[in-house]
Image (cartoon, rainbow, N blue to C red; front, side, top):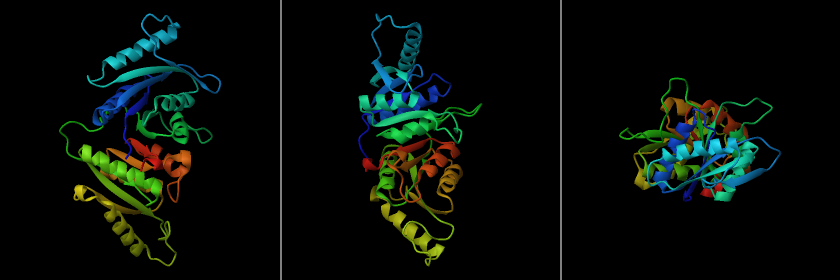
Length: 296
């Protein structure tokens, strides 16, 4: 797992912002990372005009001044000891997020998805996943009456984390990320491999029975568990559609989040397809952490 030194947190001042900021702050304290708050003002032609948050004597436009003050108030709520700065942009939301991420050298983007997009359109979160070069932690809006979650609440027992893998290099980056998080936090990684209903998955042939393939998959999953996490990592083999099986496992285990390898920017391999990533993003209620394959 690559070091996380800078975390980008794009905010829109919606009710989801509080939970998003809490997650980002927890991660900053965990990794000793710098936090960059980002707000995009308006939709403009393609491209993003990026400006550092200016000093107090800067006049600025009324709308910019108002949002600058809202960013300052957010910054004031952060725990002491977190290095933080802010950016305001004008442009297409996804372009602005990706551009700011590259400018500040972000290692992780913490973003909130506001629901499933129409079939003919992609959401801002999906566009960021397509184009970002760093990891992306996608949160969901809390349901009405639902208390905002934290990354890990103080004093609670270890929480499950679902980690799907097809044993490719890309998905192994997510496995290593989950293991590193488990070393730092009270988390229990649950490794998951999904085989097709016919018993054919990845390199398997149609002659291989499903039971034999499942046992082979469990063996390979067990071999991934490092000695220092023995007894804290669990292995599962699912049968069916990968996206559905991942979402079902997350619901069944009441997962803290899902950690998935290689987001859509570079293309997915085997059953970790673009459709799978979107299905997981929109079917699960817990956060989804997408880890680039190059992070291994």
